[in-house]
Image (cartoon, rainbow, N blue to C red; front, side, top):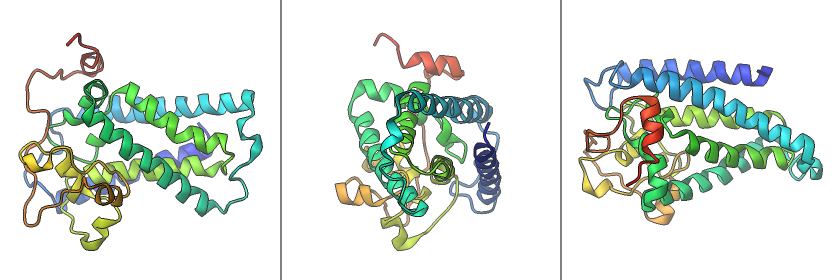
Length: 255
């Protein structure tokens, strides 16, 4: 593990602890347990094994491709200021995530990969890491390949990775937030928890954005009712597997 990856992992872990504490102080859904059903599954298999280890393997493979293919020799963005590079890849990747995420909810085969993410019945800071490994491979390849192949500063993938991880934990956290007009620009749990809700039919196929809420407002998929909170999450059926490998293979079921 490189020094930047080491520090990035430490910052993400610290962020998780902070969100865990804030969830206890300002819960969106009071009474939701810390060690809810699937907590250790999400923490070990999805957060550590997939998000950390698989994520590192994906980035190392892309670096290997670049070393042998020389894709970054054009240095397309190398001369840009570091902050501009980070912002450019944040917005670019976030638009892709919005579009791909929306496609997953409209295409039954893509939804098979996304089903694991929506299977959590008590959405919290660690629930956002629950994603099918093939979905991780697709999204993280598309996330890191442009940064590496376009010759971004070596710090950009680490910074972008930290922001993505922290933001993913934040929007799924059981945290009561009221960010006001900012919710038209940046995403938070007050909108994203409705994306996971199954107790409000108006929330169906809404709030696909991750970091930038303006994608939902621009494309007409935003849903943010006043004086109301989502209460029930999950898939709405009980046959979904409870083990990691069961969830992985369930996406490839015959029907």
